[in-house]
Amino acid sequence: MRLPIRKTDKIATAWRLSLFVAVMALSSSILSRESGKVAVLDDFESGPAPASWHGQVRLSNSHPAHGRNCLEVKFDSNSATVSTSPQNGNWSGFERLLFDVFSPEVVPLILSLRLYDAVGGIPPNVAPDDFFLARRKLFVGSGWTHVEVVLKDLGASSERRALALDRIRQLTLAADPERPFTLYFDNFRLVAGLESNSSASSKAPQDTATRLEGRWVTIAQVGPRDRIAESPAVGSLRREAEREYEALKSTVESSEHMGLDTIYSQAELVAAELGLHFRPLLPWFNNDREKEQMFSYAVQACRQERERLEKLLTGEVRLPERDDTQVPGPLVAPYPPRLHGLPIHNGFFEDAEGRPLYVVSLHGPSRGLQRFFATPLQHIESYSVGGGSRWTVDASPVYEVFEKYPDTHRVGWDGWCGHLIRDVHSMGGKKENVVICLESPHIREAVERYIERESRQWLKNPDLLYNV
Image 1 (cartoon, rainbow, N blue to C red):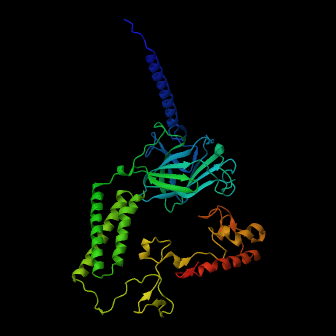
Image 2: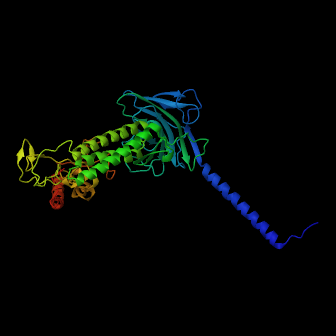
Image 3: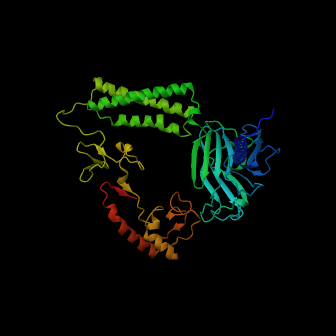
């Protein structure tokens, strides 16, 4: 018997069909986007020898990241680079360069990466800084390191132009080997979008992941952190270190209530805290070998300091006899020490008790560390001899005259100036050659104006001891 088809049934059927088509189209779009685009530059699977690579290289099956083979490279004082001229020099349309490095070394290594294009040329016919240079930024940890180089907005080191990604001519990896070592490279590829499993390298949570983005480098682990294994022995040592840390912390509080000076005990707590809670966040410390050393130190140091305080609290060890009607000063004088007018003996200022005073400083200490180190305001870095630093010269009269008068430019330097004030290799400030000549009358006059303007602020600093 045939049943009549109602109008509502037709509408429902049409709606379901439209929804099905839309879902299929969306799924197809997502799958296409997820598959991304991959161009393999070299996976070392197709030939008996890596003929396109130059250096101390050979094909190996010791540590492949993908497939069966990899490139073994030996670095020493006679051969510190390995390079290739990729057959596919058109890297436009790709987002990142990926490759993998295996290091059998226990200590991390630092390499440099260079990319040359058709505009700047290739060695030896290459203009200075007219190529991409990641100088000593390619961090290689022990075991596997997975490297990502972001290609978007990649520029020459001079920062005067973008790299011609459609005409890449050479890739070079360089080391500064103090002793010979061997690394294993694999699976050089260009990727846009999400990479599929067919081309992706094998990874483990504990592996190092190094990401280069222009001048910046990020070093992490593949993770997630809760999947990075820790041996039972190291886990037990961690728990023991945490117990000793808490026990010393409690003893320090009791000792302060009883009038003991605990500045050195607090320093041990800070050192233990760094080893227990901060350093394990860093990839090069987050392994069993390093953590065993750090946790063992925390156990020993905290226990010894706790036992020392306990002997003082119980009277087992007696402090030197003193006039208990007077309040003693601290073991470590707070900064700033009032040096003016104090006597000097054997090259040291001395306090009222004849103890030598000297300043213990640290570059940029946090507020917490200023319990142990002088304030960073005890010195300033004005670099007034040149009228500013690589950070501040842009707002200095020196920069104004440097832009205006040719005689302010230093001559005869070969691309690395020794930093008076900065060149394109300076680690900070604008990537620009501002290399001054101190013999120029214009520079001297500008430096005088700089000092006159800035010295008013320097003299207002009550903590200032010296000016660089």
